[in-house]
Amino acid sequence: LLDNVALAAFYGHGGHPAREKAYAMAQEALELVKLPCGPEARVEGPHGQKAADEWSSIVQTFPSSDYAPISLLAVGETYANNGKTEEAITAYQQYLTKYPKHMLAGQTVVRTATLYHGLKNYTTEREWLQKAFDGYFSKDAGKTADVKLLVGRSYQAEGNWAEAEKVY
Image (tube, rainbow, N blue to C red; front, side, top):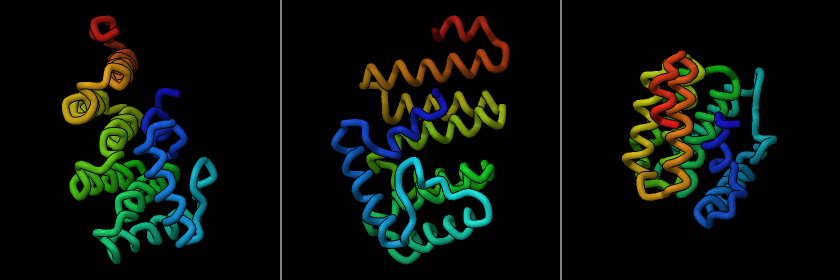
């Protein structure tokens, strides 16, 4: 459940106007390339690389389009859904470099952290969570609590209960 904190924002339907707009834009972009959006957007198996290539082509062909940021996120999700964690992290880092002020940047930082958690790289995970807190969520009490929960979970996963308790 906690791994899906960032995904819930990416896939929309959170009641927040920015998320709803992003979801609507993603639906339009996906319609153009004939790929599904939402929970069914998990393109896995042999079609995963083709899907990632299609998304990348939107970013390369139309880098200043409103669809480019969402398309680059889709590249990252496609890689993540196919177990290509390093490629997913690279796609998210590219997104954050190109679109640091995009409406889903904070959630993407958290998503990147969850990928490092999956790699059991807890120190790097916490560094990304700190970036999320400092750069995007420090003024949002709900998001701050979510990030702190993820930090505590990180310490807990590596067996550092004393630090986990401090955060909790």
